[in-house]
Image 1 (cartoon, rainbow, N blue to C red):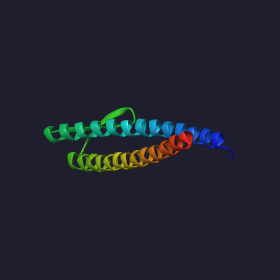
Image 2 (image 1 turned 45 degrees about the horizontal axis):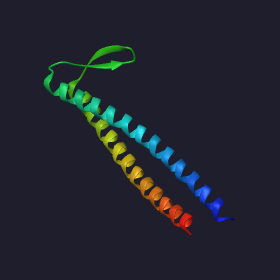
Image 3 (image 1 turned 90 degrees about the horizontal axis):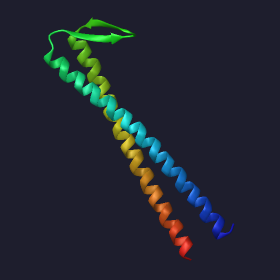
Image 4 (image 1 turned 180 degrees about the vertical axis):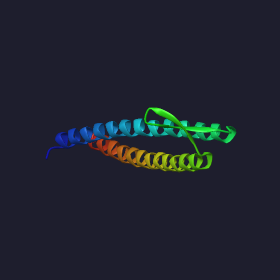
Length: 109
């Protein structure tokens, strides 16, 4: 395989990595937004004497302790997802950087 063809394939892989990074970043932002909402709900629950939960299209009264536990579990899950996304993002950036360095080195030859 010629050097030019190898460089082209490497550039295409770099572009795919960039697209994957963008998709990963969008997912991470969605999880962060959900996490922000859950944290806000937990804060509101802590100061409210009566709490409600939306089920389907209606709002019903809920047990404060069970709702707090449910939201806390959701918060922990979202935090874990955000951490996982950050690890994946870091790994993908490192791979992209390494591939970019390889492409630049092969082009200089």
